[in-house]
Structure formats: C-alpha cells, structure tokens
Image 1: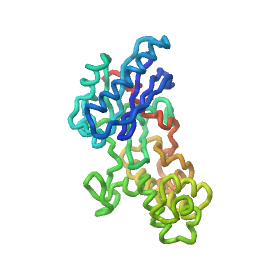
Image 2 (image 1 turned 30 degrees about the vertical axis):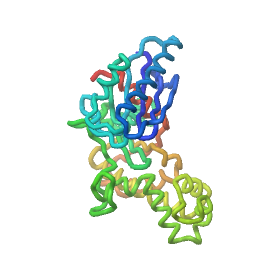
Image 3 (image 1 turned 45 degrees about the vertical axis):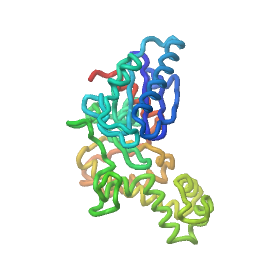
Image 4 (image 1 turned 180 degrees about the vertical axis):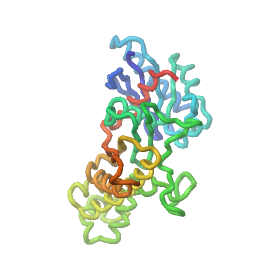
Length: 321
C-alpha cells in the first residue's frame, strides 16, 4: 500500500514521519508548535508534510497513500474537524479541508492518543491481540480503545477520554472542570505531586531524591523521581508505588466494562519500567471484579515510544472511512 505521512501534533512540538506499510519510519522531521496560533500551526504542519513528500519522491518511494494527523483534542466522527484543541487554538477547525487545500493530498485527522493506540495495536506491543486498551501516562492520562480489531471512536468521535474517569468523589480539581479525575492521581503530574509530598513528610529518607533538585521538596521534578527511584531512594520508590496503585485501580474499572485482552501502558512515565508496572499489575489483579474466575488481561509496556502517534496516524490514513 506504499508509504504514508503521519503527523503527531502536540502543544509544544509537531513531529512527522514518512512511514512504510510495515510501520517503519523512513524519514522524520520536527517543528515547534506555534503557541495557540491556529493558522500558524497549520502552516507549520503543511511545511513538514511537503518536506516529507519531497523526500519520498527523492527516495523513489512511489506515490503517497495519504496523510494522517494525530491531534491533541476532540476530533469529529468524520475524522475531518478538530472540535476543540486547547493547546493549539483550534475551535471547530476544519483541519483536513484546510490542509488538503495547501498540500494537494488526502488528509484524515484523529485524536493523538487514538493514533498512538492504533500504532501499538498494528505494529507494537499489542499486535497479536484484537481487543486492547491503551493508556498514555504523561502530564495527564490519555487513552485509546481497539475492540475486535477496530478503533472505538464513539457516536461523536470523542470516545476514550479515560483520564477523566472520576476516581474520587469531590477529589482533586482537574483542568477539565471536574473533580477527582483519574489523571489527577495516576499521571506524571501526580507522580511529582506525590514525590514532593512524601519528601516533605519523610525528609530523612529522601536525601538522594532531594539532592537531584535544589534540596527542597518543591524543587523535585519528574526526571528526578525516576532517577532516584532507579537508584533505590525509598521515597521515590514509594511515589511510583502510589501512582501504580492508582493506575491499577483505573484499569480494573475499565476491565469491568471493556474486558480487553491487554492494556498497553505508554507515555513518558512508563520509561521507569517495573517501578511503575509492578504495582500497577498487582493492584489491577487485586481490584479486578471476579478475580480468580476470569482471565486477567496482560499489562504491557508500549514498544513504539515517541513514534507511536506518527506510525498510527500514517496507518489510519491508508484505511477506508
């Protein structure tokens, strides 16, 4: 089916790649995202696409199958319009039509977490399963669902906003306007919050963790928590354990509804490996309804890393509507 272009559009960067039909990224390019400038971000995306299209021609890769855009925001069911992209300045923006008029190629648009999930399903950690839930653990929590080999998009195209499952009644305020959302307890931001709180309570045990920052709990950042936990700092390890437990509880809730074969955990926080995955798996199994009388879904680390969104978006561009 030839090569396609995948573009992963985030609030700070636009990463694009020329992807073959085996999921291999043949060429890459990257741009900074213009802050909340809708027209400017479309112009930057168009420039990246045209650069890769020229590279495909120069490399003799044949005609492009299409362009897939993975965007952080709500995308309509027709995969044409971004209804709301908070960090991109996009509000009911006809992204596909506008880009097609600039580049002269067919364009489909998908939510970025959905695109990353599709990439893992087709070419990554869950390529041997048919029913998969992907959980992206970064600043917040994103998600994607594949059921019986098809991406679940919902009646309006906005399915799988799993980070906003309410886990705690009247809990921590969330940026979405609600309280107690899962991402306030199981995300990268939550990890830093937990580590700072624990370091303030247990300063005597947090010497290594605090030494990576400025010596204060307020100076602790995400990379410090991971480095300190890998080195055995008990407070950093405890912070990962708490986040993993919250993730496991959320997975158990999702399993009760969706019954997937596997959960794929991606995003920057999963780079900590078993520090995060062990408490996640343990709590998931403990909280799973009917545990002992049903199969237990695998909990797998993502394999494609930062390429997942690019690879998934490009592959979705090859599919019929």
